[in-house]
Image (cartoon, rainbow, N blue to C red; front, top):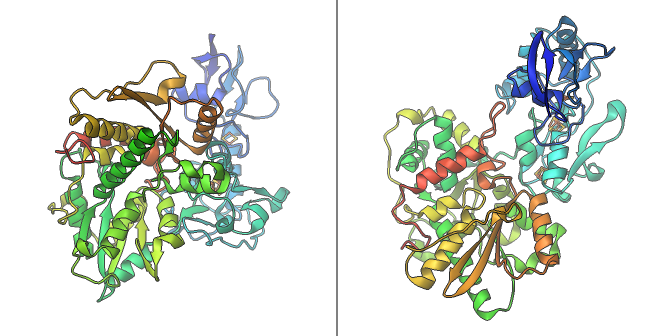
Length: 540
Ligand code: SF4
Ligand code: SF4
Ligand code: FES
């Protein structure tokens, strides 16, 4: 039911049951927030969203308070402004003063709030506790001194990822966000998805940087640095540069990396195509032999770790193909046909991806052979731009260069791997093309019912093969459990991406102020698919 309330002497339309904050935002009235996250239950932890409601003695937190009939609200009264400013001053009272060399300098919600509240000095000085940063994990670093206890990471880890690798520990002013028994993220259940980094307002959670070792390799006289640029990285680069998608975005990236000193720049999409081809072969064999019922994609390292740690009974259903990153790394380092004109010890392979889980994947023991890693370093999109900035390169005004032969051309299917549902479609199409010899009559039917929103079926030589796609571990776990418990035989392949929306929402994507661009990135990737000569991974 719709009704009106008064806000700042103006009538606005609200819906019964919604929170005051939602109603204010929908009506274009800005209220600062810190702990609030859309689609998550409110915690009321930060109190920054306070407003004054006529008849209430105390200020109320708009993110958790439902709209009421005859409400009269003031969002910016002197009392409200004073209270919010005091809250920010308290948050700053024991915050480190290293903004100039902080990874989130210029992109920190605490800085923005201080500026917005006109905080000009440190008003309160509270005791600085001795916090120990946690650099133990391969993908995510924690600095508790920068934590403002907003709980966003705790909620995303628990509610979106079902992992609960981090939680509040200790009480009152001793409270910190920490891993179990304060033992460090490396030895607990963290799946290295990086979703906590994406929601953290400060630099309390950041990706483990590989920039220094990449720069050291670039500076090393005997190292030849080979960059492997993922298709989804190209969409993120186009977005960050604000340039219209065209056929040669990767040419801009190649030129920039060559200026940094790259020996070769390859398209990681080539091994995305290989990965798809391997999974299709496994799926086709499974269907032919009728031995197994279900195959899960295995290219997302966070999903693989989740299965290994939490659902070992599902492990046999994971596809056996290596991920695109490791396929390309092992090809370059260990396949003599790769003709890299350099020894494997000289080669230094660096992938560029919107993913922090790939840092963990590249560090796994089975990805290293006699001390030689298949992939030596992984740069997130954030790190890629830091590298480019350090080298003083203006990517908007750079002359494109070709990617290097022979790994310079991938298909539209490789781009599809960048968003949730894309890989399932690519696998279905490949299966269809291999069975029928063409894609002319290929249809990836998406039924209309709500539950079937992420399922589709493809008819191959009179047989129906069922596909599904899920992203976010909580969604994946619930969906797969329902398929298994329901003993559904109509679903044969499930694409799982740990990050909501797939790599388009990956933990290594740029972090923007108040903006989540997952849907836009998917659109960009789909736009880029139109420029591909080859539509399927088999390059037909
Ligand atoms: S990386 Fe993922 S699993 Fe690990 S703490 Fe962060 S949200 Fe949780
Ligand atoms: S680590 Fe970051 S996201 Fe988590 S509670 Fe602290 S400030 Fe909030
Ligand atoms: S945003 Fe409402 S209490 Fe934090």
